[in-house]
Image (tube, one colour):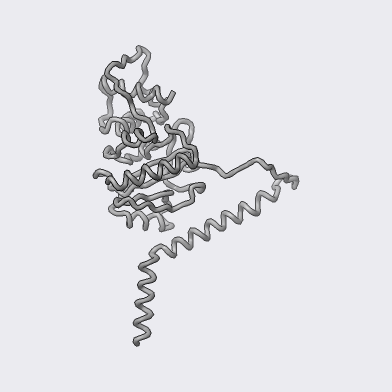
Length: 263
């Protein structure tokens, strides 16, 4: 009886220390399957058995960073969501409220975080981006610890993959009809001040040209303008921290100023 109790205690402690042991095992198995495919199939030719391997290639690398809020109630809940196969959603990184960064997928692999989305001419954002989720339900401010950790992570990613300053954007920017993350509480100006995304300049003396077209400006920035109202709201959420589906005269100047940075 004594030994049974001891074994049970040890088993429980082991589970507590490694709550994601089973999902980590599945991750390694799936990564190995992909590695086996890469090893096998480049050395075969499906067409005429005349395979000649080029010496000039490398791994695909991310060119965008997409920032999300989790819309869940805790970091633990999000980690469970991303380690449950049936959910079919994931991200490369999750940042908890205390600033802890969980790296959940190799950066060169394709996470399922963007869904149906478009930015400019890119309609497969998952294949060209890194997804970062911040533990936040969408109705609260982001913590200083989270933002500090995010800035450190973004600096590392920008340097590692030479990601352009313009290519740090939000989920709502690429999916304006479906998503609203990160919310109006997200500090885009702080990110831009550190080189991750653009911010507008003082617009006091801006004079709009007579030819200025708001929809064309949104398209130049990258927005999908099929739903014009959704595109306006997405822009305003990111740069003006409101979601009223219309521009006033001063806000047109902000839109013009931002557009010039993307030209």
